[in-house]
Image (cartoon, rainbow, N blue to C red; front, side):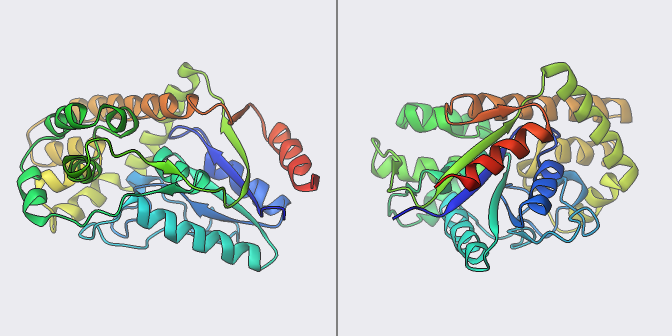
Length: 295
C-alpha cells in the first residue's frame, strides 16, 4: 500500500518559505500546515512573520493562532495536531504542504518520532524555570549529550522538558516510528549574504508594521523573562521600550539575534541528507510535479 504524499518546505527565517509554499499550493491544489514554533501563538503577529489573510491568497493554513503564550505546547503536541491537519487535507482530495523553519517540529512529523511517556514534574519545572537558558543547556549537555546536539538551546521550555525526561532516563533517545507519509523535502537555498540582506529588509518592514506596538502589548501581560523566551528580538525591543538600551542598539542586537537564529536553522537542516536544496520556483514546481505523478 502506497503511503499518502506530503510535501515539506524548509529553510531559515526570511528565506521565502511562505511565498513559495503558497505559489505551489495554488498550482497543485494544496493546503498548508505551518511548522513554526512562534506562529502557533495567538499573541504574536508581526515579529513571528505570521502570514496575513491577504498574503494567503485564499490558501487555507493550519496550526496558526492555536494557543496562548500562557499554555504549554510540546513538539509531541505539534506532531499530533499536524498529522490530524495533514490527514484532513488528504481527505479533501488536496495536497498537504508542511512548511516552516522549526526543524524539530518537522522531524517529529516526517520521522514519526516516538516520544517517551514521562509525566510532567511540576516541582522540577518550577525550579528549572529560575535558571537562564544557557545554564539549562549546560545541564542537558551533561545529562544527555545527544539530545543537547538536537535542541534549540534558546528554547527554555523545550530545554526544561528535555532535562525532565533525561533525569529519569539519561539515555532517552527519540526513536523513529514507521513512516506515515511519502515525503518530498525541499529546502530554500540562500547564500549567507543574501539571507542576511533579506533578514534586514524584513526587520525594517516589521518596524513599519508595528513590531514595537506588538511588544508594548505583550508587556501589559507578560514579564521580562517570559518575553525573552519568545525570542531575543522581542527581548531587545522590550529593553528599548523600558529605556535600558537606545534605538540603534535595539536594532543592531535584534538583527544579530535573527541572523544567528537563521544560522542555527541552517545547521539543523543541513544535517538532513533527504532535503533537496532549490534555487527557484520553477525548480520546485518541476520537483513537486514529478513527485506527485510518481507512484
